[in-house]
Length: 112
Image (spheres, rainbow, N blue to C red):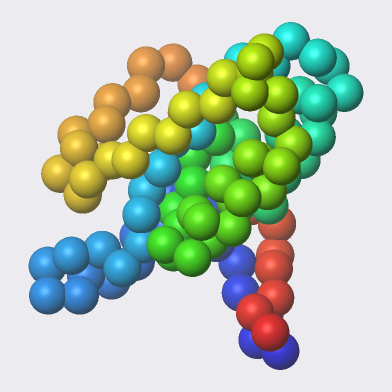
């Protein structure tokens, strides 16, 4: 097993001018406390918790698919709202932050 650490701010080296990963901002509005906590725990497996209901995720396409599958099984489609915003490389470079910039670092993970 190879130990790796990823952060939302890490950039994947370009592959012919393109990112190999997808930068996705995930926001959610979930009225049920228990379900909201479970959604937050799932998202912590994939990205950095940057605001109360917002995560920034730097994902491979298969990781995005797996994250969506896990969330689809959990959320109540009549009550909950989860949004995925993909940012292109140019949009990511133009991101501006006003105020506190601290981002929670991602935990170590293992690639099997």
